[in-house]
Amino acid sequence: MLAGDRTDHRTDPDRPDPAEPVAARLSTLDRYLPVWIIAAMVLGLLLGRLVPGLDKALGAVKIGEVSLPIAIGLLVMMYPVLAKVRYAETDRVTADRRLMGLSLVLNWVVGPALMFALAWLFLPDLPAYRTGLIIVGLARCIAMVLIWNDLACGDREAAAVLVAINSVFQVVAFAALGWFYLQVLPGWLGLSTTSVEFSVGAIAVSVLVFLGIPLVAGFVTRVVGERRRGREWYEGTLLPRLGPWALYGLLFTIVLLFALQGDAITSRPWDVARIALPLVAYFAIMFGGSLLAGRGAGLSYARATTVAFTAAGNNFELAIAVAIGTFGVTSGQALAGVVGPLIEVPVLVGLVYVSLYAAPRLFPGDPTLPRRSTLSPASASASARSSI
Image (cartoon, rainbow, N blue to C red; front, side):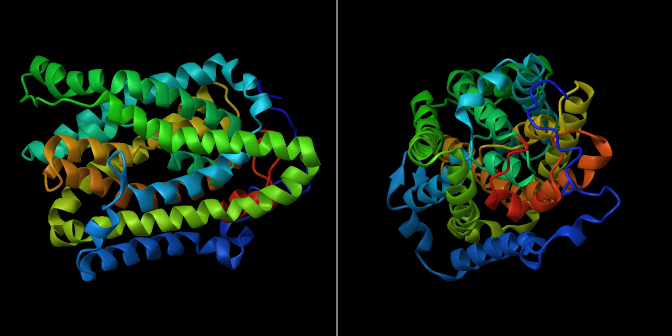
C-alpha cells in the first residue's frame, strides 16, 4: 500500500474493470452531467443578454468584490464537500512531504510561470487581455477545485489541506508575484511592463469568506454529527443527503457568473476565442503534467489527482475582483478574468472524466482507485466514500 493510503480496495468486487468503458458505468443522470453544466452556462449567458439590468441587480449587494448571490452559491457548493473531510486524519496529509512539496512547486512556481509564457505566446499584441490572464494564473483555486477533486474521487483530506495552504500563500504572496510577473520578469526579458497594485485586504477577505466559512461549517458538522450519531450514520445517512447540494450550488453559481457577464462575452466573440486558446492550453498542460508528476513521485491515484486539480484550477472570483478593482469593470483585464470560468468549467468537467478513465491505466492496482459504485462524477459527489 502506498504511503498515506488507508484502505485497500484491490479485492473489492465493486472496483472498476479497466476494460469496461466509463460511459457504460454511468447512470443516465450522471452521463449527462456535462450537459447540465453547459445548460447552466447557456442559461446564464441568455439571461445576461436578454434581461436588462440583471447584472446591476445581481451586483447591488456584494461581499468584498463578489456579488452576494454568487457568494451564496459558492458557500452552498463548498459546504457539502468540506463536510465530507475527515479532519482528524489530515495529519496524514501534512506528513507526506512528496505531496506537499510537489503541490507548492506546481501551484506557486510552475503555474504562474506557465500562464505568463502562454499569455505572451498567444496574446503578444493584446496587453490588456495578456495582463488579465497573468492575474488569473496567480489566483490559485480555493473553491471549485474541491468540487472537481471530489467528482474525480480524489483525496478529500489532501484537498482541504492544500487549499488551506494555497489560501495562506495567496494572501501573503499574490501582490509580490503580481509585481514580479507584470513588472520585473518582463523587464528582464525586454518586454513591456504593467504597473499595478493589489489590495492584500481584499484578497484576505475573499479567502476568509469563501474558504473560512464553509470550512468551519463543515468541521463543526462532522464533529457534532459523529459525536451524537456516530460515523456510520454521519457518512451513511447524512452525507448522501448533503452531497447533491454541492452540484446544486455549482450550477446556481455558474448561471449567475455567466448572467453577470453575458453581454460582455456574447458581444466580443473573437476576443473571447483569443483569450480561450491559452486557457485551454494551460488547463490541459497543468492537469496532465501534474497528474504524471504525481505518479512519478510515487503518489497514489487519489493524491495525484488532488495535486493535479489544485494545480490546474484557478480562483477566477478573485481574479475578476482584482481585475475590476484595479483596471475597471469594462477593462480588457476584467474580460479575460470573466472568460476564465467560461473555459475552466467545461474543461475541468472534461478532465474529471479523463481522470476517472485514466485511473486504472495510469495507476494499475492502486488501492485508492475509484470503486465501480463511485466511478461517475455525480455519484461520487453524492456518496460518502471511505476509500480515500
